[in-house]
Length: 413
Image (tube, rainbow, N blue to C red; front, side, top):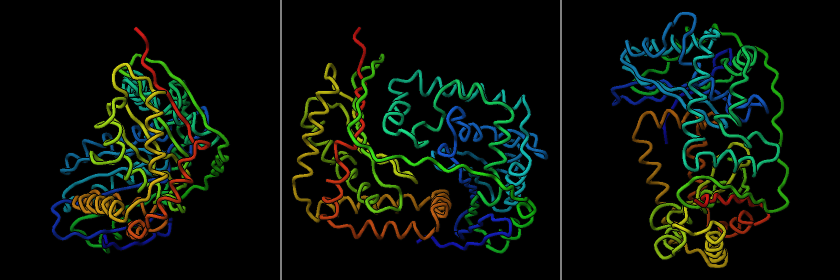
């Protein structure tokens, strides 16, 4: 259990403190409830674009990084389909600097044409280097688009296309800022050797006067039930064929979500997993293989992916994967098998909790889901899942009519 105290300011900002008297640093984590699922077609990638823009200047801060470095701090951020998260570490004695910096860019970010154009070049280059010029780098562009017909999960956080990023106007940028960067759309977690009342005082001083706009958010389109298997074949200059097979799965918090997480752990987590043993160590088609879930707030994907051995075709490799999945569905799962996976999950949870930053991020993320206590509740629910429940949900989830398959084929030379 991560101890915390939680308060809401009058303007809606959620403030959480986690006291760790043994910590020599303080963590300042600000989560905004905006990710790529809040974008619209033709304007994709704006959430990620803002992650870059936020490290520019604001009305009273010419250079964000330099101001923080002078206070002995460091910072970073990440964007996902569901959230954007900004975090800093700094000495507790300089904690007020973090409040000043974050409140200034929440209220009055400088979005000059020069700033926007500079960051546009940076993001376009990132897009090319990470997604277009890397082997298999564009797979999530293709897999998301194949799996989702209407939900914004059908594009990756970087954006659906270069042209979307190239065509942002100043008004697009300002509108996104006004729509998403305000107190009631944010969760602040301050962790370390800190006092809750002192943190609240600083939050009220720096964030309290910031008003909330009245943004009009359009409803996020719901994905309709998939009615049949989807297939796409790609060819690219890659070393070997690769296979990506995704199944629709429930949203976080819905029945079946935790079972899906355990199923992928049983099948594809670590060197002792079923897929690793059957397909890599004792097979001749896969060079590597894994299984995971996207962990989405809305219904997402349960994914199997692997690279083939030289000259092995992805379609042939899928036959071997399907055979292992059939065996899994038809065989009984022992309590010992399942407990081993649960123990691994518990070890990972303990390991993650060692770092103060991880604790702060978890408190922010689960508060965004509704309540920080969901962190422990989710783990307790997962610990209580039985082998029969795993088997029942495996049969529901691993349905070919719910699958989207990409054969990523190496071009013949």
